[in-house]
Length: 172
Image 1 (spheres, rainbow, N blue to C red):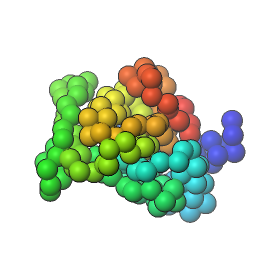
Image 2: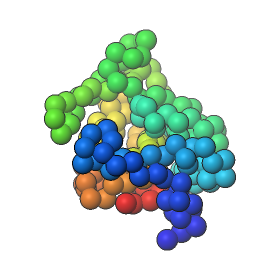
Image 3: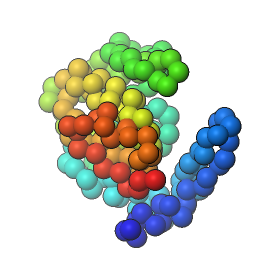
């Protein structure tokens, strides 16, 4: 285990039965409140690739992606739930465990060929990450990699984004 992995795991709080009974929620707010750990996470993610844009996935992905974009001297692009962006959008729908969801990005968010790093807090089943990859590619940009703070390995989300480089700072 790396020093960074230990720092991260020490700052993630387990919350049983949230948001529903039987779920063990991984709360990253203690990590966000710690300036040393937060800075180490941002520096690590920002140093992964030279890119033009950093995509943050709503909502907790924004918290990490915006400072990563600043640190990497890249633009920040939000990928949001349907209906939250004000200008013309592209959308991508995907299946959830119970139902489906749709995410959007502004149609003009990328220049043709932009190199993109997708950043999120957690990779779970991989549905949102895969939909984001598809959306970015449809918008004319190139996904260089996906980077997440934490991967829930037992959910095998990595399998959904096969073929895309994936960086997980910790796997639980």
